[in-house]
Image: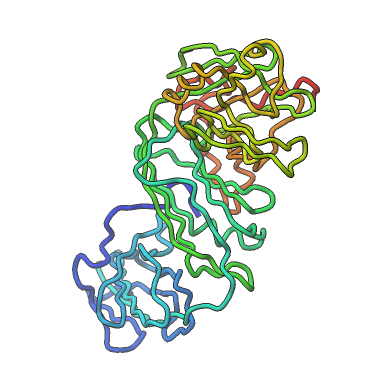
Length: 420
């Protein structure tokens, strides 16, 4: 399947006008000129199929013609809105079907000589499933403004097994305006899947995403839990470059250096991670409680905190370490900055901005945060459960620092000081 624009939100002809319908059978009805064979249509679900999942789509294949109309109605005669897949392989209802209901799909195709055929199929959805649902979370909210490195993230609990990932991925739809095609890529344990393009998003890009997973069979004993969607936009380009060698953070906007800020990173026994991260969430004030964690055991309130990893690495105000910032690493893995710098950063950054840390003792682990940019494009694309178009490549070569303007590709992760 072409993954480049999986959610095509244009109006389809599915009910612009009523389509020709045959008698109350599944057989095709053809009209048109003589001397030309009418198109042959195969529609799924097959006629009179029962126990169809509520995630069902209308699929159609045509011989000697092309599809010119699709209409899907429920057992009360109400039309069900649907959107076509870009490759024409199916029509996806814009919301899940209802349990224990009967639906009728009519597909019309037109041949080269103008002859048309309409194929009709009626199917019944399954009763509410008793199978356990896999919990999904869409980390992309509606009506927000995100940074240019913002990946689309869907998390799963438990993780999706490898054999089920292609089916799940087919139900994850993305539309970008202007078009910036990308692909989904799975973390090894199946607990997260990321979507990004080969290059950073362009400022002003509008993004719509739908995780249409409600009722989707996942493996033999699980189903998807919900159907979620959101639309937001990309804001200005901002990125942070933190160098352990200099203990400085460089802040870029639109490729231009705005400011350098002294930092104190993780001390040797609790080092900060090196790699390409993304700001995940921002807090004016929050509490770090590490009791019960290795190298933890403290509770502290912090101001102006910005999360970088699931493991608890943040950029935050640390007035207690201002004398060390720019000179010595004393933190438990976070990037400590002054009160004034932390407050200024909160007004500059957005969730989805790229943060690159280099030169520390350990490397960022895949899945510890939104790590979609911590590998190059070719490696990222290998994580897709579906084919990725060969022509989908970064438009520019890797840049020496993450201050490149949006639309460029990310730099390769810098090696740690230990070479690990």
